[in-house]
Picture (cartoon, rainbow, N blue to C red):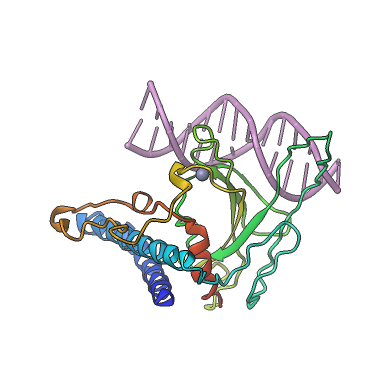
Length: 241
DNA sequence: GGTATTTGACCTAG
DNA sequence: CTAGGTCAAATACC
Ligand SMILES: [Zn+2]
């Protein structure tokens, strides 16, 4: 059930990957609509997964994510199929009683995905650096609501090196995988305390009154409760390699 | 007017 | 010193 949803999600993503660039090279309205529909399908799917996941957690049958939440020490992936040259950096913790060194608290969760942006949160890029032995730069994002909601969540995205199967040096763009590392937790989304609602009407896709919602909502509006990263992590990692 | 990204400067742990 | 993380001015996009 849950796995079926995740599988569906992955399939939609995989379908989207090759189609999206084609759509962008066309200026037809239908193309834009198709892009929007992709987002809507993904968003709807995420919403269902969120709700479902909520019920599971509630019933104590916690859906075991296929990815480990990784602390700063060692980065252990449950299935370490691909040797993704992951790095987890931990910083000096000079945090004793009198010494309140509040430098970055590096608690990280990492994953590898080919859609590093659909994680259910809004991010603002604030930097990019080339990393010593890596061919692709690392991008630094922080939560959009850092200032107004005191949300200190952060993430980095870096494309993984992988050789194209066609022998071409460069990966064919939309197939590329990205290593995403999350730092900190989101304190935005203020309704966070008693989030879990009974499943009634949680998925507010207006199925009943849906006749006229053409451009519809987009993904950020649909998704609300639960950490999308966790959800996507689980389903993504089940597909790695 | 507003907000996002780009990008070299700047900072700091090691 | 260097490497990597962050800032911020310039720029881009509405
Ligand atoms: Zn946040």
